[in-house]
Amino acid sequence: MSKSTTSGVVSSEEQVAQFVTVRGTRVPRLGIGTFGMRGAGATVGVRHAIEVGYRHVDTAAMYANEAEVGRGIRESGVARDALWITTKVWHDSLDAAGVLRSAEASLSNLGTDYLDLLLVHWPSRTVPVEESLDAMLKLVEDGRVRQIGVSNFTPKLLRAAVNHAPIFCNQVEYHPLLAQNELAELAERHKILLTAYSPIAQGRVFKDQTLKRIGKRHGKNPAQVAIRWLIQQPFVAAIPRSNQADHRASNFAVWDFALSDQEMEEIAALDRGLRLVSPAFAPWADRR
Ligand SMILES: NC(=O)c1ccc[n+]([C@@H]2O[C@H](COP(=O)([O-])OP(=O)(O)OC[C@H]3O[C@@H](n4cnc5c(N)ncnc54)[C@H](OP(=O)(O)O)[C@@H]3O)[C@@H](O)[C@H]2O)c1
Image 1: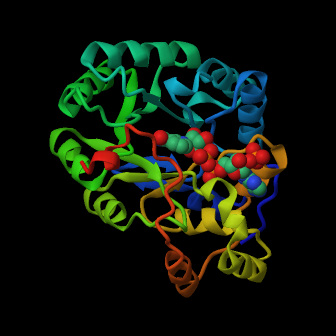
Image 2 (image 1 turned 135 degrees about the vertical axis):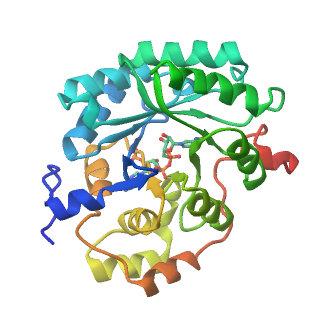
């Protein structure tokens, strides 16, 4: 296999590896996260990420950066149908009217005719998930949204959602220091994309000796090993975020090496239940 470059030039073999196919739909395995990217920095960052080779962009109504992210996408000059755009509805807008309003605002802010994926950002404690999903299905019917999904859903909540609607994705915190075995099994069983957010544990992977050692063997840093570990799993995508161009490029340079089965297991054993994103309204806070 030829080497990836930071300019996004990759071999055709690498291009195949860069996608996961979920129920016939191809999704770029590695996306650029945009939480906390604001103003001109969001535009420059997203444009640069696409130049480097990312074809998947993750944003949310709550990030208040969709207009800047959309500008970055357009400035990249890459065709809309070559990109995967995910956005999310905040948990205070999950009634039927709120979902429609939020999605239309996202479409308008992003400057696009359709969203590849619209997610429930966090489960609501007041609106039944069926109501939110039905509104999202209406958006699919109208051609405004291609796929619908959820984020931060526990196995129990995910089962309820799957029983009601064709859930394409569950986006959750997932990295070598936080296992998601049950959600990964559910993703495989139901053919659901499991998108890993905070994939490098917000930088904490750099301190891990095992990831350092394995990385050294492959000429890679711990973030690259963590990202590779995630996207080498079936149905898993990852969305690292960085405000720095060299970090965005290095996080994408993960196509020219592979972890052995033994290395995959060694990394899986690093789990220590380190959950970094846990707001008061998280579903696990009240054991749902
Ligand atoms: N659905 C949800 O509820 C949810 C929740 C959290 C996040 N997300 C999504 O997931 C994305 C990523 O998660 P995240 O931002 O929490 O965590 P992350 O991607 O694991 O880590 C981001 C942090 O790591 C640093 N970093 C990135 N690449 C690096 C590198 N190569 N070397 C050294 N440091 C590096 C960044 O700093 P620099 O900027 O200095 O590089 C930043 O501080 C978010 O942007 C968002 O799109 C979704």
